[in-house]
Image (cartoon, rainbow, N blue to C red; front, side, top):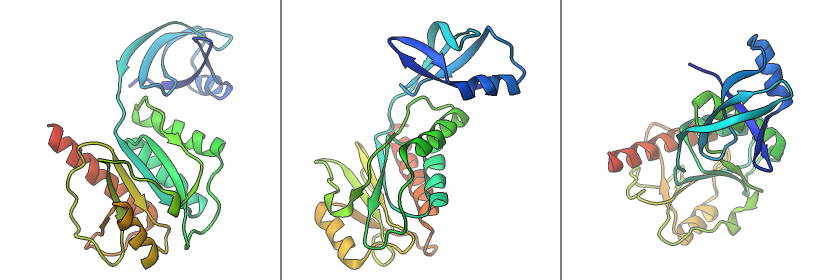
Amino acid sequence: MEHIFWAETKKEKYFLATDEISHMQVLRMSLPATILFSCGDGKLYRGKACEDGTIADAEVVETAGKTGIEIYFGVCDKNRISYILEKCTELGVDSFTPLFTEKSEKHPLNRERASRIIISALKQSRRFTMPEYREPINLKDLEIGKGEDAVFGSIGCGSGRIGGCDGRVSLIIGPPLGFTEKEESLLMEKGAKPFHFDTGILRTETFAVSLLSIIHYIKGAKNG
């Protein structure tokens, strides 16, 4: 399988970042060379990487649409956040939004570090659409769009079943200590549905990956 490199674009021109050139050196690739690359716009390109890092003769070889899935997660420690960003990017999401809740733990990752994790996961999973890493918001400011399916992780309530998922879907996941009863009531008032796993209480990052996998299965089954 060919490696996929990450490129940046400026004035309709593509060029490799410095760390990607270093990556080529590790792979013992000499320039110029024909490579596969992406810049997160939903397209996989093939082009000629030149010695100065520019990429010439770029052509689209594959395209990918958005998933229609957004993830909101309660702020927790950086290792948990890194796991959520990496694994959920591999599975496929459109955006990540950190949430400040009553039981949030620490500060969210800065945008630069989050971008590095997301880009690495994109290259690994051969996805070409860069998920947006949004600024943190307070739970009370979360808005659920009309006709949008929204599901939140609940420790004490929920049917354990998910329906719909025909359009956009928002997955709302609490911090490791979960949402308070007041917060769960607020989410239900906003139109979100509670969900819990009968297997027990899962960690924030485990719940995120598990719930996202279920949503992808439901969407795939409906479209299959």
